[in-house]
Image (cartoon, rainbow, N blue to C red; front, side, top):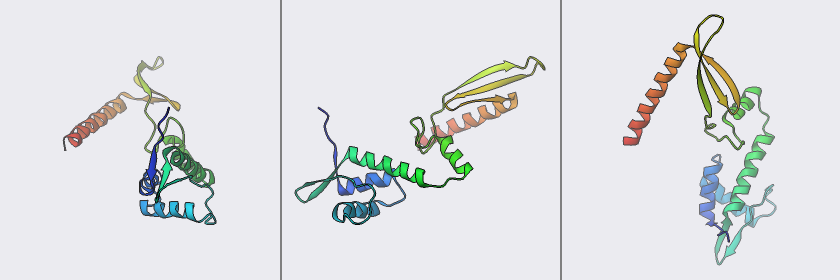
Length: 160
């Protein structure tokens, strides 16, 4: 049997702040208080809760459902410009393969030679979303340097 995870109001408010950072944890605590004590305060989605003595507890699943509802509501009601919509699609926001910080890179790099001109190039093949880039040898060298520099920076940060 699956064990149910319950959170206090303050922990629930902190979780909502982590997932929906447009409000502080204190603002989310006030929102949760209003959600349970004032049915006329205009919430579109009520977050179910349980009382245990004087404590109020929230189920992890109910909080997750509310967060997803809020995110989809915000994306669905926003009038996005072409570039804003493109940016959300680019990082995969709201998609299974994406996050708020970007998609996981799934790619292959293939060395090739142009049959017509005999010039070397590379193809960077990204699987999700499917896109193929042609990279000239100098671009490959520049990217290799940038990746090496980034790896060095990560090593420094992990030692700090």
